Length: 277
Ligand SMILES: N[C@H](CCC[C@H](N)C(=O)O)C(=O)O
Image (tube, rainbow, N blue to C red; front, top):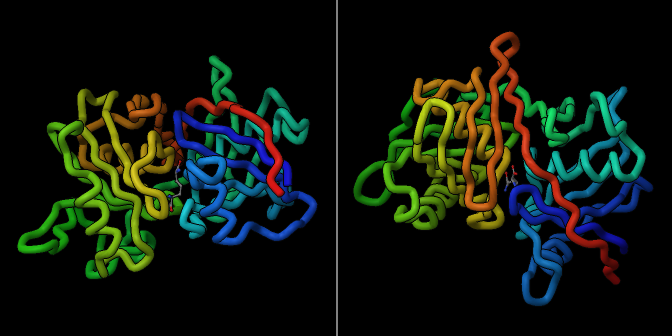
């Protein structure tokens, strides 16, 4: 099976063209491909499939390294868009639409040629995240953890995200907190956990420990989740655009004041082509 290795700000993907209707990968295949010693090495496997809605050029699905599927992948969406343009299945200039498991996404190019994805409207209702134990949106949520509790923001970008704001990001024990929250009954579908350090209303640093993978060099939906939560908290100005510095690169996230949609822009890089038998 032919595949394309890509990354978005260091978030590694294997892209499979399943537009002919072939079945999706098994959990074993995801784990094998994701294995950095015995496989190709990726955070997620992206399958490109026939469109699911009228006017869309293609659909995509997201499979984490542990074989679990996800509702959204921001870095993956940009790589899918770039893949479709190179394949001649989408216009190199101008707008087109792709379908993720969580909805339709408009795709545009910015002046630098980077792909911009309409990531939709952040959903803060606990039932939408999902987050159990709370009936209405709060900020922060105080989640009992160990002997104490942890104060988090939470939102869905089509996949679940929790966020902690910290002063010293590099020294923070992200994995410890993330694994505890991913196993917590408050998150019945587990959760992607970010830690953010706000540097200015238009700039934050972010690390993300992803559901089904672990800490990645970048997380696009995590960048959107962090900006959405911190914008609502008044810590950043999302309508002016926010630079999100992740270990693997920089993403730009902007909330459109007119419709509340969150747009994310960033790199999408082709690394190599391969075949898997
Ligand atoms: N691990 C995520 C999916 C990939 C998200 C990330 N790679 C991105 O760029 O948004 C989840 O299970 O919801």
